[in-house]
Length: 249
Length: 89
Image (cartoon, rainbow over all chains, first blue to last red; front, side):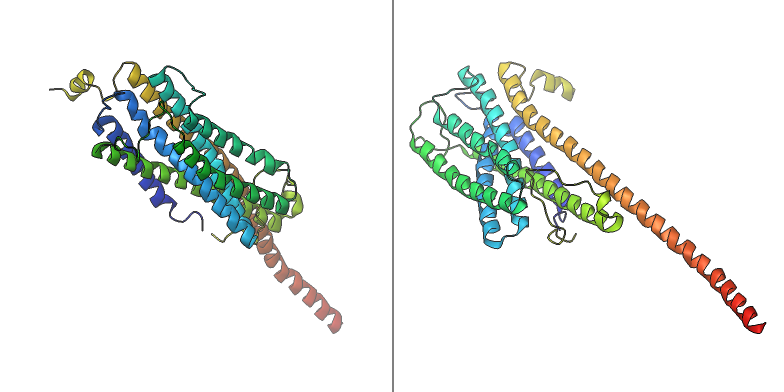
């Protein structure tokens, strides 16, 4: 039943994204220090936060997979990491644009926040090759789950370590001695986090629905037309779902 | 006053360097979502093709069943008539 509620979720995401865009461009005040360039913050930071949360959620799904042995949890963990990687790329690109606009450089290697986000990206970039290297689906799911749990635990540790590191370059927005965001900026920021969270959830749901549907149709083809009508499975990084495990729609 | 003239005089996104960078950041997100939608559309087309195959096969089987059901009646009748004629003779 992964397709359930997709229409409502799509509408909610569209409304939230439109509201975010309108609020960022027309309503949020310009930053006194950075001016209009600071508006990238409403895109870059929520995307980065959703990415990091998603990696932790993927670890929780992977833990459920190890506990239950269900491929459904493996699929969820895989899809969440897959989409989080795309969000990670958006975070890196928007961060680079912001860095170029405000610091004059696309990348600053001595800035812990940037480098740690890149390290997290590179860590998760090895997830797909790891899966691809294992042919047996059971082992693939198990090893990938162990990876997702360990990497998922690394993400908050990494985040805390970076927060503890002192930096004079990257702005700190929350919990600083200088105070947080002003009310209007905070409101727009929270709307943006909700919008990015909805967008992430929507894409994950579409991806899971598509994958589940593909497997159900494959199983149906085999039952109806025989084994010859179904192309043999090649090696794949994506999890395979046995027809009996594919949820009824 | 013409609203377009107001927008042109005080644009939401300034035409200077800052405006271009902010626009670029939003275009990155928009482009990646657009690429994802395009990939998803291709996958959906494949699913539709597979479903079409399944539907065609089901139609073919239904037609065959209907034809054989039509054919069973007269064939059985003819066989029964032949057997009856044989018995009578």
